[in-house]
Length: 178
Ligand code: SF4
Ligand code: SF4
Ligand code: SF4
Image 1 (cartoon, rainbow, N blue to C red):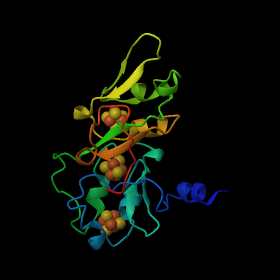
Image 2 (cartoon, protein in one colour; image 1 turned 45 degrees about the horizontal axis):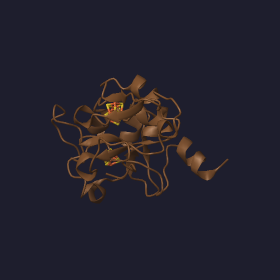
Image 3 (tube, rainbow, N blue to C red; image 1 turned 45 degrees about the vertical axis):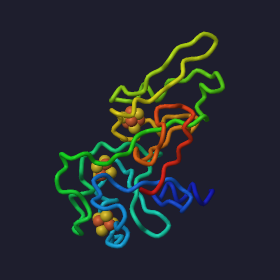
């Protein structure tokens, strides 16, 4: 079995894999200096989407599912790494589309729209083309539910502050370690 596939199934990521930090992380810049890599947050996540990178630090892999914002990962951490007030926004991440989207090759697909509970993925109709998706990022929670269902792997989760021009499908986005 391919080593990346094996690591993925074990919940491990290589440096090339796409992970982001958990929601409500207090200070992303200093997270790695304080996290002890105890893995308590991995075990606590009921969705099974928290894995560890090649250095043992935790992160979310949306290929395995979506974040429900239950806050379990934040509650088990005893190192003051997470925001205590879970009523605050969990992060500023939003979904972005790349031009790998099947509709860019005139292949009809609406899988992402069907799974988005926030109803922020809208399709636009024009003559001679299959409907084209667009994400209204102002109401996107960054839950990541749309990532795994995309057959073309064209959806990524990005920090809104790091992603210019987010509402255009031409946006090339890569999930990054947040
Ligand atoms: S908030 Fe809940 S679903 Fe999201 S990563 Fe943490 S434990 Fe998992
Ligand atoms: S529970 Fe806290 S210290 Fe332990 S791995 Fe998770 S974030 Fe790091
Ligand atoms: S990240 Fe969640 S809220 Fe945002 S477009 Fe995808 S499914 Fe919808």
